[in-house]
Length: 497
Ligand SMILES: Cc1cc2nc3c(=O)[nH]c(=O)nc-3n(C[C@H](O)[C@H](O)[C@H](O)COP(=O)(O)OP(=O)(O)OC[C@H]3O[C@@H](n4cnc5c(N)ncnc54)[C@H](O)[C@@H]3O)c2cc1C
Image (cartoon, rainbow, N blue to C red; front, side):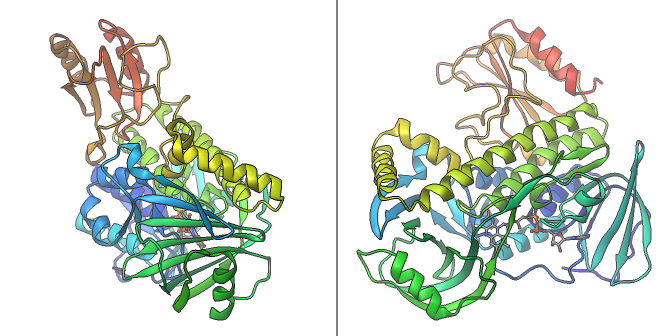
């Protein structure tokens, strides 16, 4: 918990500004790597408003890779599918288990997730300093001076090699660095509440209700609660329970009658859709809502922020400890800015499809959705997008080169079926199909400071070898005998012993 009396250091390796989910995940990774990390948050206490409520399958995998699997499951309600309704009638059910992951999506309140992350950070020796606000950041080639204030006191300068702005949608670090992106206001506002419900609705599914005048999403949370998210007009007032019930009756299922029980924490929010110009400027990096914001349709905001944190975490851990070249950090910008743009487009398509007014367009949408639910090849892109499986790094810390390595997947994709617990030591893994080649790969791996493990995997009709990055994405694929290509790839990013 907060330790307001703890003195602040005058010099650290990394300042993490903001202890939301993004800042906490990156802080855990850097602390695990043995770096000197200062985590500050201007708020005296963690937020208690209802915000994100779903960890998608890929995020659940990544957090499990950090060793948080059991804790998350303890605080969460498993969600195995997304059921889509039009004018209250079920159209199709998209099942997450068809993705072949060991994890379901998890209904978890952001408040509980943040607490689990704080517990983890503290267990490994970290701390969140509250209320400590970053007032200014002055960066030069060698690092930055971060001025912070505690409880409105005098500014205190802290020298830091790197500063990560995880300070949310209104990020002052982004503004000071001149990295503001263009964008626009999302036309609707969103009503969110944690509610009790009586009536018959599947608690293993998130239910998406499309209607003439917007959409409603009901997804399960622990303690028999539901997260209620509905589009509304731009009115700023917080709705009453009666207004929530009216929307539920109008947009909810026709097949059963749902009655709103006690609502908890009703809120309404509006947002801007924007992506920062760049996510890196020298030693200053942006992640999470500080880097991008978009509509909550599909619950992608927090999930995208956590994926940023993981991508940045392993790279910065290696660079800041001298085990990788500084250029590796540029690939954070390349990979995650593109991922944020893709997520924003996906959310737009998704929200747009749920809010169609034209009856012909709605009929077409439903026909496609129904067909997609029955034909894997059609359902797969929607499911993969929702679950966070469609992030493919085509540019960045990946080597396209010659095609090779049959049946591992494609370069840049998440490696299917082998979930890494690699994030605890930021290790790369070289997977080799032919045991006779393993010793050559082991000799190569030993030449780098960064932990690089070699494993022989003979099953699955695979050939050649694959380099799997700490985040579980395939960084390189090669045929038998192409070890020289891998050496060139590793030399580009990692330092030699
Ligand atoms: C009402 C609502 C509903 C939402 N629903 C969903 C959803 O269903 N699914 C989903 O995925 N996402 C949802 N989101 C978005 C999700 O909450 C955000 O994407 C997520 O919180 C981003 O995490 P973050 O750590 O990047 O930023 P934040 O959670 O915003 O954390 C930023 C932190 O930085 C601190 N801070 C700010 N300025 C400073 C400073 N100068 N110095 C020090 N600290 C500072 C703040 O106090 C805060 O703790 C919702 C958001 C809202 C508001």
